[in-house]
Image (cartoon, rainbow, N blue to C red; front, side):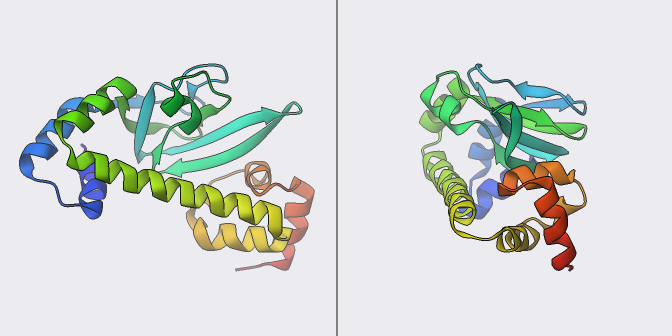
Length: 190
């Protein structure tokens, strides 16, 4: 069941059979229904998840409005970075938008896995670096680009999500109103 996760890890650095076997011991597979909260505001994020199937949204509340911070689908890794790494209560909600199957590992077990298999420190760092690069791209986009440029970026980088997500989630992710997104979509047809 962890074939997809092992494939991702091997794409960063080849793993031997023993390391793959050890990884399999640490991950738990969970199946959750649509609209299931994996994390709520004020809780400590105790797990990192690997998406085997489904769709998940990470969001926070600002001025009584939900703001989408990230979407994860098959082959993505997700958590609430601030809470997971600081071990403090965070501000994110993590909600499934479709029935989902996830492989999860607790913070404690991840630390043990890093000790047992030092190559996973390297792999974990590369994956974390990629996450922060994407996060920085999104922040730059929101701060410095027009609504049309933001939506074009979303279309180019997340084409599979355009048909799966409600427009209000995409709009909040892009930092624009749903009305602005509707006007923008009519200008940009792909």
